[in-house]
Amino acid sequence: MSHRYPQIDPEKKARYRVYLTDNDAVSIAKIYRSYLLEKGRFVSLAEKTEKSPEIPLLYGAPHIYLWGENVICPDDIHWIHFREAINHPVLRYILQVTAQTETGRAGAAVINEIRDQTYISVYQKQIICRMLSEALVQDDFYNNDLFVLPDGITADKIVHMHSDERIQLHKSLLAASLIDVFEPENTWMSKETTDIIADLKSGGIDHAWIGLVDWTQAYKTPQVVYAARNAGYLVGAYDSYHSIHPYGQEQWITAAFPDASLYEQATVTLQDGSKAAGFQKIGRKLNPVYTFAAVQERMRNILASKLPFNSWFIDCDAAGELYDDYTKGHETTQQQDAAARLKRMCYIRDTYNMVIGSEGGNDYAAFVIAFAHGLELPTFSWRDSDMKNANSPYYIGRYCLLFQITVVQIISIIKQ
Image 1 (tube, helix red, strand yellow):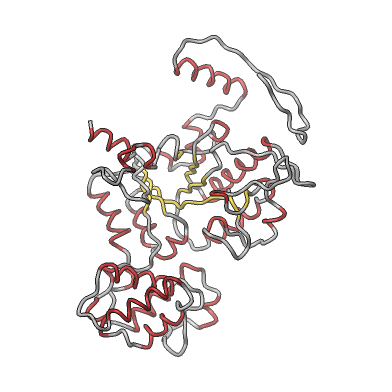
Image 2 (tube, helix red, strand yellow):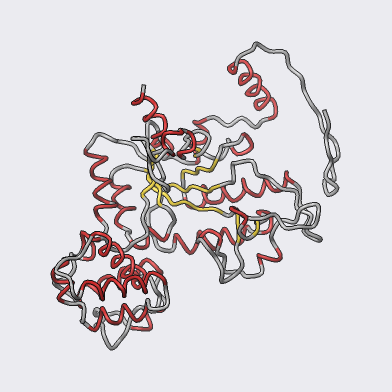
């Protein structure tokens, strides 16, 4: 047995206990529970429920992510009327505001194609919906030469709106400008959101955990959060404070932070002087000790929407990837890293009355989280070779986020 003491750790001692026990997992677990009780670290489910009263909504609940980033889907558009309106000034404007993006260029190509067609293919419909969605989420979508604002709304008020309000306004402006083209904007994306919730409830699913790919999905379709709550479900968004990307070059939303200084001043330095790389080797890993203010700011901004989330999933924090940080002047130990992760999970739980989950569910986080994804509820196709084999009837494609009860186990049962 060997042990390395980090240079920055002021407490250079380690203790070990050796137990003789029966050769089964239950005996080992009982010894560990006794140790937690001895150290005052044991927290019962009843004690967790005192802090998060909605934990019982997890009992028997499938965990389901609703995946989708669009504001509008093909079912929300009357395509015959859309073809008739392709020269409308509003559609020309949408082509203009998305012209510099890959989605916008693809949409412009599809618009040119359907001018000479008597139909619109499924693929073309999807491209158009992506282009419309990209335009509608832009903060400066409103154009006073094209749109008539509702009573009481001014251009100045739009600037100060929360993102979810602004997107809903943009949807209504587009629908009002092309009345025959769209279904009522408050029903957009129902097939992928509220209809699924209704089907689950009518199918006898009384408890469920509904996850969104990120919080902005709720800004686009806020009705899904309300529908889930009305069904008696837990509903939350995926969040993470694991990685940070260079300011202005963020590749996913959880790696974006308004404070540009964090990338240099609050990221983990390894013992050899190099920076710990972020997820998929992109960007860097954040030191949670120095980023609590960023957590508070993000959560304040999200919950300013008044969307009734009652659960939150914080990736990586319970997964055990803890670091000694050798950044000069900001040296911190793995123990401090773990404590800071627990602090932010407790903050989100207690401040916003959330049922908290994280990845893996390692023991240091067990007293905070109510559920874990990855270890307790495996989700990915690599656990079953047939699910990765394109020639197998169980192949699920290149990208998939599965029912977490879990589909891997269900398929194994079916095959047996």
